[in-house]
Length: 170
Image (cartoon, rainbow, N blue to C red; front, side, top):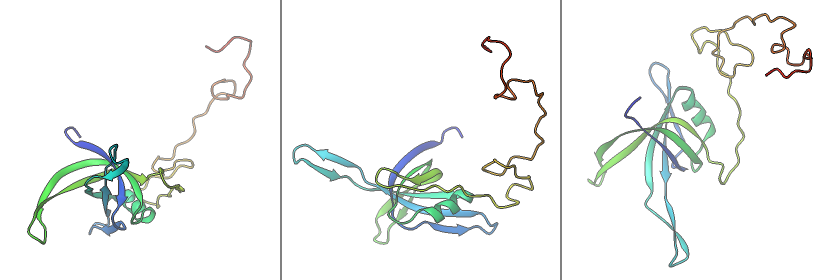
């Protein structure tokens, strides 16, 4: 959508993902990501941490379930999404604060200091309004269709078939 601010945040999960379901059965997960900038101080020859930026991140539907199943507290993540307008509130001590919120488009573990094993998740039957799943369709949302018939002498339909003549096809 026009006018939205898209950002990428790299940081650590402050808590385990909190998975909930709406009354309509839609999954939603909330995670807090803390990102602390580090700078090198040439005078002291040391790395110094800046002020941590805390971001409340929310994902919906299948992404929410995948986040809850895959990520845990302390995991370093890369999050991309749409920045929401900050909401102002008062802390328990009476201090005025603002909360940054991000609606997650993509999230995954950072591979800078860790490794990950990716497992493709199969869709549940009926998740796409009755569309039949097609073999080889990783999302299972393409309608089943018959393969178009191709003539046996079509070189593009049968790439392993020998070409007639020595001319290049281009």
